[in-house]
Length: 67
Image 1 (spheres, one colour):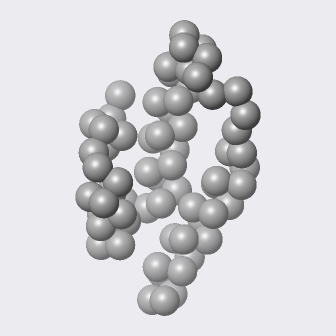
Image 2 (cartoon, helix red, strand yellow):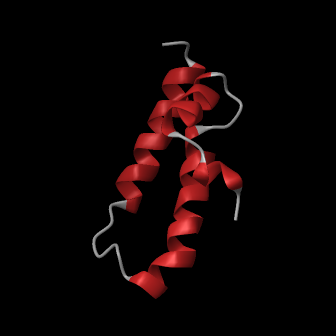
Image 3 (spheres, rainbow, N blue to C red):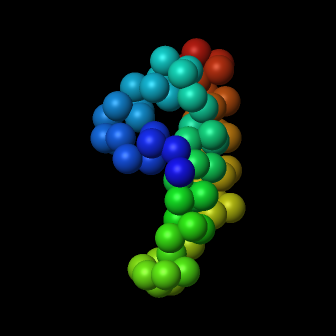
């Protein structure tokens, strides 16, 4: 598992702003962690993965446009 998923949210936000990682890539890493661990703990029963992916793409587009 990638250690990025264990870093503080502020640090991750700064990495996205600096374009060290895209919001979509970061979301994918968090989703991979969720998919790896949730079956054992069943902590998440409702997801909005498609909406999260759309928001991540939107955030990346906004950053790319310089807004």
